[in-house]
Amino acid sequence: MLACPLQVVAPRRAALAEANKRLDGANKKLSNIRARVKELQDRVAALEENLMRATEDKNAAVAAVRKVASSLSSSFIQLTGNCAHSPTQASCPALPTVSLSLLWSPSSPLLCPAG
Image 1 (cartoon, rainbow, N blue to C red):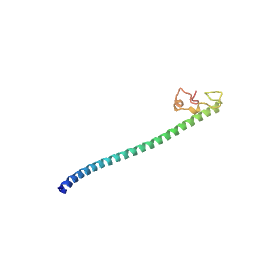
Image 2 (cartoon, rainbow, N blue to C red):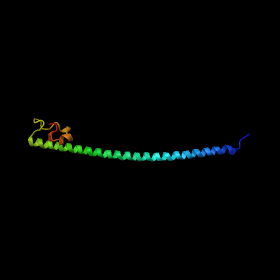
Image 3 (cartoon, helix red, strand yellow):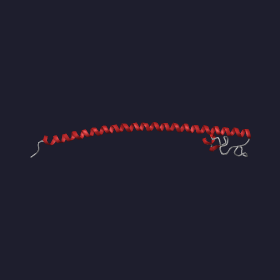
Image 4 (tube, rainbow, N blue to C red):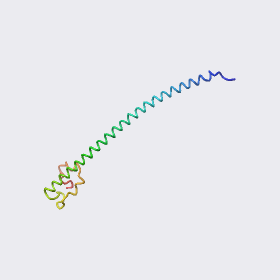
């Protein structure tokens, strides 16, 4: 003999309602997590953009320092006729390796970084 359809369907409907309730909760949680991931991705993009700008600024500053150092060395060579580092050469071999610490260190020569 077959069971009454309501006896079979009612528990299944209750189980389905419970499963849908859990699914809704999981979907809400997933939505919150996706929103947080989006916030973090936007933050990473902003940080990467700031890093690129800072790197460009640093590279421009380094290029300006090298240009000033080269100009100072060239002026010294024009005034004296030679490089303070190597008096027999008409240009300073150390110019390509100019560093900020050498330019502003009181104990290092200003016009010839290798000195």
